[in-house]
Length: 190
Image 1 (cartoon, rainbow, N blue to C red):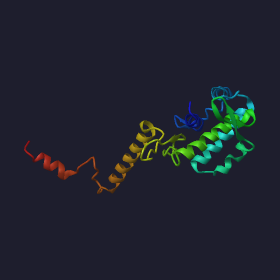
Image 2 (tube, helix red, strand yellow):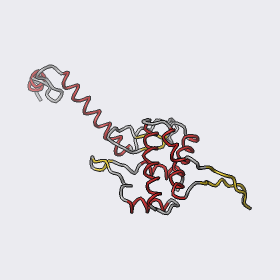
Image 3 (cartoon, rainbow, N blue to C red):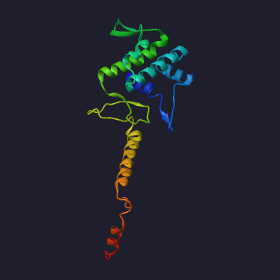
Image 4 (cartoon, rainbow, N blue to C red):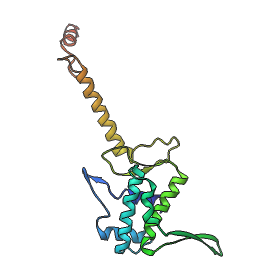
């Protein structure tokens, strides 16, 4: 799994399910399994760093905080070069319990550098998910067109319809063409 995919998994771990915000990482066992799948040990300190870092990253991506909100999570971490028979590798040096959390911040930094402005929250204000826009035009707005995109488009359509009906003359809605239309149809001869 790429760093970008891991980052999105972490950011999207607080979805809205059936209208209720959920935290998929609230359960220690579930977060522990996630951490192990991503190279950690799933221990208590590691889980706490992951939650703290996820929350800070969500606030930064939403624009509620600046990148300085991540400072405590990366404090003292550094990447050092290591030469091997295969070439140069950069190795993250940080306490083991912070390694997965710092890895999320490094993935975020990489996305910011390689795809500036393309990591964003879903435009549906009722949604808590994030997306990385890979479209050429950089115009993706929703985490999923099938869910959030269609919901918002339908909502706007209904709002426009209600507004248009509210502007119609009293007694004449768009659905009821009024007596003049009915008389014309009756006298139509068909």
